Length: 115
Length: 114
Image (cartoon, rainbow over all chains, first blue to last red; front, side, top):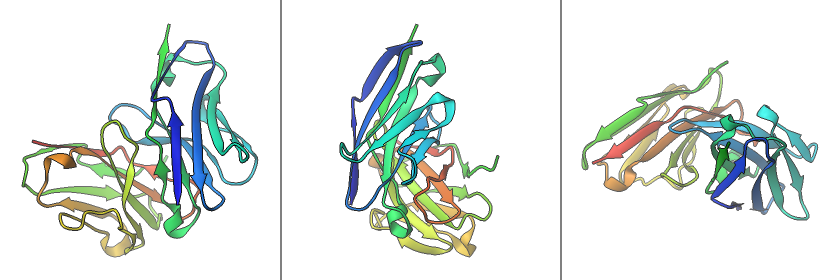
């Protein structure tokens, strides 16, 4: 079984500041890990994914995340926040293939970017 | 860029009525998922199809929900009768294979039950 915990339901940063969204996972098998972004009344857009290759994963829009097995973490970062980054962010985990391919999501972190 | 199509985008229905959502996955994608996202929460899997077969429907409330994917292409999710607690975003996603590589989500159907 897999689960995800996102620390902080709301995060507020100033434009240009570092963005750090925290995600810890639990998995009984080697995990696949994902970050998705959701804008109001929209579907989910994949930002990046970890699938057992490089532990530092680069995604779209300047985001990246580092898989740390010892800490069971997969935190999302961006060096400089932009107003357009304001959205809901979801961390998700899956176990791989077949029925294990379903995604288990965290409860989300709402990112607010202020001037 | 290929997209997962969902319709309708918004649906308002009265309690005890029937409602249906449609999803057309990316062409060639054998795996299709329906997720439900209650406001303020992360999405939760309702049902997973591989081609026309149900792979996982363990979280589908089968007394009122049904899903089908005839011919293994597009899919319909039905609720009958709808209850107030069914108000949520219903998201469809598809992937080429049932692998843990992330998949493409549609824009969703926002259901409001009144």
